[in-house]
Image (cartoon, rainbow, N blue to C red; front, side, top):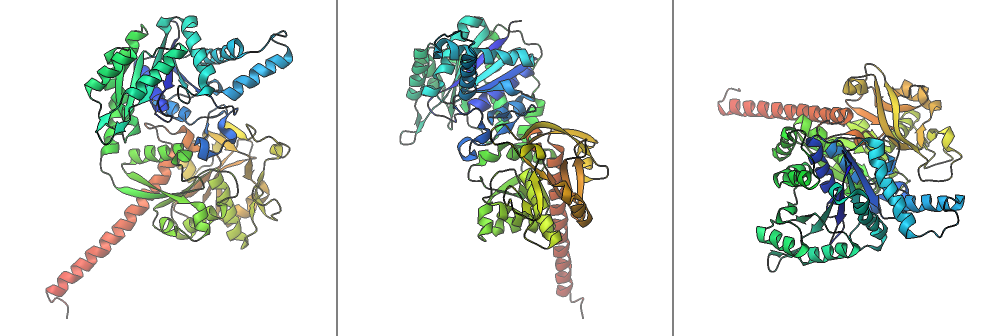
Length: 561
């Protein structure tokens, strides 16, 4: 069978939901028995998002092979339950770097290098690598940005050419647009969608399907109008209403007949009947009222929740499995340094410190970790959250404020966290950290081993600094347990405190491997510890209230003399 390609473009506004739509369509195809590959084409000139501010780009999602990619690849992996590789995220920076490199080597034999054909050929070559490296039968390709952006023109031109290269029967174009709602007249307007499709058609691409996103119900006559003016079949106009539950989107698309339409349009034959029982359970559990726990997420980018997207999802996955609801309390770590917002920490049932870079807000995170240790509040640290747990514990053991990471204080006499030896001479920031999947041996009779139920795991990393082995003995004598260690014994991957209900942190990023139907074991263990502690506290409160009630009843009956 020839490889089939589905191309996703966006119109009217950015952040319209192309990534989630593409991921959901990928799930539709997987449920029908096809091997699915996904790729994101990003128009920005950065080589990858690894050096970009989370405020501008959101989370950097890391793959098994160490590629630093767009957060949409997290959607793809979680929805479709696949592992992607480096060819699945392409940027303008990568394309131009490759073409210029070839020109410098003389590969073009002195020819003039142009956008067409050299840049577009490189883009098409990279699109073709997805099927070759993953064995995908259906490849979904999402183009970042919005039709009309000057940056995305080479990508759109490459997609136009692919229709001729592949044949119309092997490629399909899905355009995702936004229907603005006019409050005064209480109506949805289709004109922006019409203009967006006109812009796309001027490039030479006619969409086969239009996904019309809206926060409001879309009437049939609106779909009919879009079909008429945009020259698509009425059943190919898909009204996709915003859902508060992310994982409901595949079910919405299935109910709207999107999967069957794609199968028909691409000339495929469904291999098995889709089974949505697991997803229906997920959605029903999300809707069900459940006991709530408050998790204080202490970070420096909390104003933009997308900076911690995978952490949010991993917490949600584990909460669903445990039958509880997580309310994330976003705590700006810099506020804690100024004695602000401490109520959020003191009222939290659990504290989580995620990854990050730079010194801003670090002392606030350390204060939150100290509070978790002293008050025996369940704590979970990720990457920097582990390193700062070591710093805080070192300060406690040595009764000094001097222990630190050399990332923040190069002259500290107690560098409990330090650069890896092979990182000391590196000057470039991009793509030079310990990145991707690395092995870890779990030590028996530890909370980590109990959570994983195995003695060996592989997890995704993104960091430069490590626990300094010179301080291992001091930390261990004080009560720190190194429950996860690299196979060669050089690197500490997981730490725990012995005399604490749950204080565990990882050098890696477990959130990247969590799935809605397969929560990460460490997130499960963390929330289970939170749930148990909340339950015990409620039991004590209830027992106290019961005793008070009995005493009051006895007083009423004059049973006390």
